[in-house]
Image (cartoon, rainbow, N blue to C red; front, top):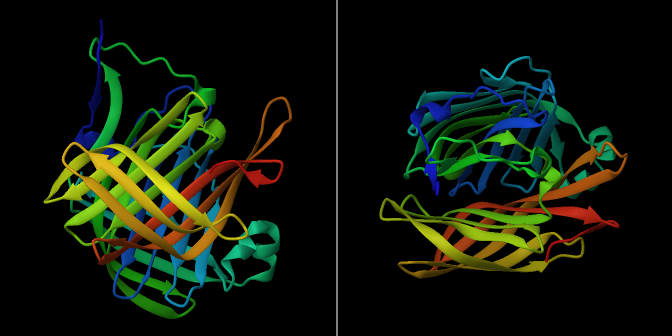
Length: 337
């Protein structure tokens, strides 16, 4: 009987040959938050070479509560690089050093909840010039990779129900500059990055909760609850401590929501083989995003993703990171707890 193992090679930091699935996606994501300035952001490129475009997202949280946001679907003809829509990711040294750059327009939102109605938000808020140039350094081991069979045979996957066939994450440090509308900030902070590749639809799961946490450069967390269906829910994550990762065996997140059902505060609990952990979260600034897709049968599917810059407290020590809540929207309401 063949067994499953997780493989990750330095070469996986570079882009892969796309498989034949029409919804093949290869994406990289970085977040970074300067603890002293209480600002930061996240950057994502998702290449969809078989569909001829990339998903480009830039989201920057400013100290005064404003958020700079831009999303685009620039055309691409290859999956060889991450370079589209003004955003570029470079691998300087696999697992150790990368570079994130963005140069282009950004929507400057005084009230980020305007993005509940994206077309209205883009009409009524100014688009200004933005530049970001951040060097990313790994401060932890790598976590994750690609599940493969030890007999070499491919794992069978249904592209319609897939979110990715490979995924890895790493806690990081980030240092560089961010310029928006003539203002400039130096950023020296901490964050988390991930990479995934394989077929993806945002509607392949019912809901998830993803917390990325840097208390300091020695203590970090990632908690994940992925609810694919009533019969399938994965709870896991990692704890960075003493330069090593502990694997989360179970976790739960108890959330208090505001009137728009956006996460406001929460308590996260996790258990590893070594210890139990409790981390409290308080959202400082949040932007609601969405993804829409029509099925071949003409059904309109709507996914809501709320992205919160979050203050975290662990054993009295304050850190920062992201809380990302994804829900499918049914009858106008997000379905997750």
